[in-house]
Amino acid sequence: MTRRVVALVSGDVQGVGYRWFVRGQAGDRGLAGSATNLPDGRVEVVLEGPDDDVHAVLDALTGPAAPGTPREVALTDEDPVGAHGFTTA
Image 1 (cartoon, rainbow, N blue to C red):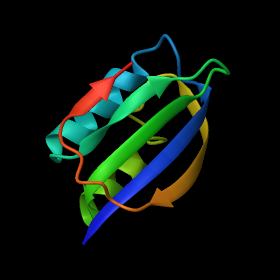
Image 2 (cartoon, rainbow, N blue to C red):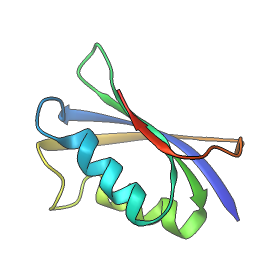
Image 3 (cartoon, one colour):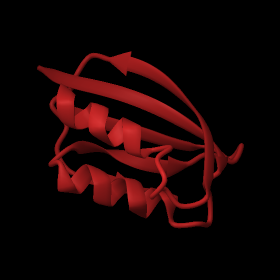
């Protein structure tokens, strides 16, 4: 089953390589999406792909290997759009 989720990650997650960490995690699992710095200091992570792979990356967002100090992740599920590739901004 394909899942698309938007995760808003708060904490110390900008300027520490967090987006590149997420890109690597998503790439390792073949997921599409993006990781974007927001003006309020959070990072918006969009993931789309097989549910098990999305779940694994979501777990990694606050795991011990995550750079910085991610504190909270607010999730919103969306309808898949057939996205391809992963971008950072």
